[in-house]
Length: 114
Image 1 (spheres, rainbow, N blue to C red):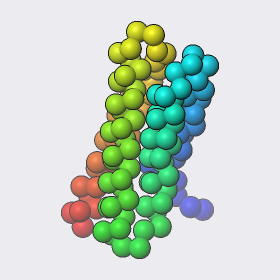
Image 2: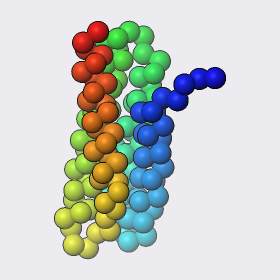
Image 3: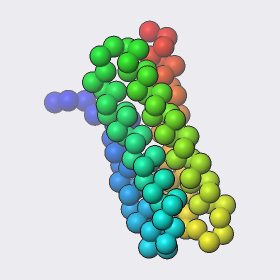
Image 4: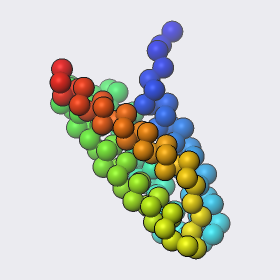
Protein backbone atom coordinates (compact mmCIF):
# COMPACT_ATOMS: atom_id res chain seq x y z
CA UNK A 1 0.00 0.00 0.00
CA UNK A 2 1.32 3.40 -0.99
CA UNK A 3 1.91 5.95 1.76
CA UNK A 4 -0.31 9.04 1.43
CA UNK A 5 1.52 12.10 0.15
CA UNK A 6 0.13 14.87 2.38
CA UNK A 7 1.00 17.82 0.13
CA UNK A 8 -0.46 16.13 -2.96
CA UNK A 9 -3.68 15.37 -1.05
CA UNK A 10 -3.92 18.86 0.46
CA UNK A 11 -3.37 20.60 -2.89
CA UNK A 12 -5.97 18.43 -4.63
CA UNK A 13 -8.51 19.14 -1.87
CA UNK A 14 -7.64 22.85 -2.04
CA UNK A 15 -8.08 22.90 -5.83
CA UNK A 16 -11.54 21.37 -5.48
CA UNK A 17 -12.49 24.01 -2.89
CA UNK A 18 -11.13 26.76 -5.16
CA UNK A 19 -13.29 25.44 -8.01
CA UNK A 20 -16.38 25.66 -5.78
CA UNK A 21 -15.47 29.15 -4.56
CA UNK A 22 -14.84 30.36 -8.13
CA UNK A 23 -18.31 29.12 -9.09
CA UNK A 24 -19.68 31.37 -6.33
CA UNK A 25 -17.61 34.29 -7.69
CA UNK A 26 -18.98 33.64 -11.19
CA UNK A 27 -22.57 33.53 -9.90
CA UNK A 28 -21.83 36.98 -8.43
CA UNK A 29 -20.50 38.08 -11.84
CA UNK A 30 -16.93 38.49 -10.53
CA UNK A 31 -15.52 36.82 -13.64
CA UNK A 32 -12.02 38.33 -13.83
CA UNK A 33 -10.96 37.36 -10.32
CA UNK A 34 -12.81 34.04 -10.58
CA UNK A 35 -10.73 33.21 -13.66
CA UNK A 36 -7.42 34.33 -12.14
CA UNK A 37 -8.06 32.53 -8.86
CA UNK A 38 -9.18 29.37 -10.64
CA UNK A 39 -5.95 29.29 -12.66
CA UNK A 40 -3.54 29.96 -9.79
CA UNK A 41 -5.41 27.95 -7.15
CA UNK A 42 -5.58 24.80 -9.26
CA UNK A 43 -2.06 25.22 -10.65
CA UNK A 44 -0.53 24.71 -7.20
CA UNK A 45 -1.59 21.09 -7.09
CA UNK A 46 -0.68 20.52 -10.73
CA UNK A 47 2.89 21.68 -10.06
CA UNK A 48 3.20 19.69 -6.83
CA UNK A 49 1.82 16.64 -8.64
CA UNK A 50 4.25 17.11 -11.51
CA UNK A 51 7.16 17.46 -9.06
CA UNK A 52 6.49 13.94 -7.80
CA UNK A 53 7.95 12.63 -11.08
CA UNK A 54 10.86 15.04 -11.30
CA UNK A 55 13.98 13.89 -13.13
CA UNK A 56 16.36 15.11 -10.40
CA UNK A 57 16.42 16.91 -7.05
CA UNK A 58 17.06 20.19 -8.90
CA UNK A 59 14.06 19.54 -11.17
CA UNK A 60 11.93 18.68 -8.11
CA UNK A 61 12.91 21.93 -6.36
CA UNK A 62 12.26 23.92 -9.54
CA UNK A 63 8.74 22.51 -9.90
CA UNK A 64 7.98 23.08 -6.23
CA UNK A 65 9.21 26.69 -6.56
CA UNK A 66 6.71 27.18 -9.39
CA UNK A 67 4.04 25.96 -6.96
CA UNK A 68 5.25 28.63 -4.49
CA UNK A 69 4.68 31.35 -7.10
CA UNK A 70 1.15 30.05 -7.64
CA UNK A 71 0.58 29.96 -3.87
CA UNK A 72 1.59 33.62 -3.59
CA UNK A 73 -0.63 34.59 -6.53
CA UNK A 74 -3.56 32.70 -5.01
CA UNK A 75 -3.02 34.52 -1.71
CA UNK A 76 -3.17 37.82 -3.61
CA UNK A 77 -6.54 37.05 -5.25
CA UNK A 78 -7.95 35.84 -1.93
CA UNK A 79 -6.78 39.07 -0.23
CA UNK A 80 -8.62 41.07 -2.90
CA UNK A 81 -11.79 39.04 -2.26
CA UNK A 82 -11.38 39.60 1.46
CA UNK A 83 -10.87 43.37 1.16
CA UNK A 84 -13.35 44.18 -1.62
CA UNK A 85 -16.68 44.92 0.06
CA UNK A 86 -18.78 43.56 -2.83
CA UNK A 87 -16.92 40.23 -3.15
CA UNK A 88 -17.66 36.95 -1.42
CA UNK A 89 -14.85 35.64 0.79
CA UNK A 90 -14.12 32.29 2.39
CA UNK A 91 -11.76 32.59 5.40
CA UNK A 92 -11.10 28.83 5.40
CA UNK A 93 -9.44 29.12 1.97
CA UNK A 94 -7.03 31.70 3.38
CA UNK A 95 -6.04 29.45 6.27
CA UNK A 96 -5.67 26.44 3.96
CA UNK A 97 -3.44 28.30 1.47
CA UNK A 98 -1.27 29.49 4.38
CA UNK A 99 -0.94 25.91 5.64
CA UNK A 100 -0.04 24.65 2.15
CA UNK A 101 2.52 27.45 1.85
CA UNK A 102 4.21 26.46 5.11
CA UNK A 103 4.42 22.82 4.02
CA UNK A 104 5.82 23.71 0.59
CA UNK A 105 8.43 26.08 2.04
CA UNK A 106 9.48 23.27 4.41
CA UNK A 107 9.73 20.85 1.46
CA UNK A 108 12.02 23.28 -0.36
CA UNK A 109 14.29 23.87 2.64
CA UNK A 110 14.59 20.16 3.44
CA UNK A 111 15.18 19.28 -0.24
CA UNK A 112 17.98 21.84 -0.48
CA UNK A 113 19.56 20.55 2.75
CA UNK A 114 19.98 17.01 1.40
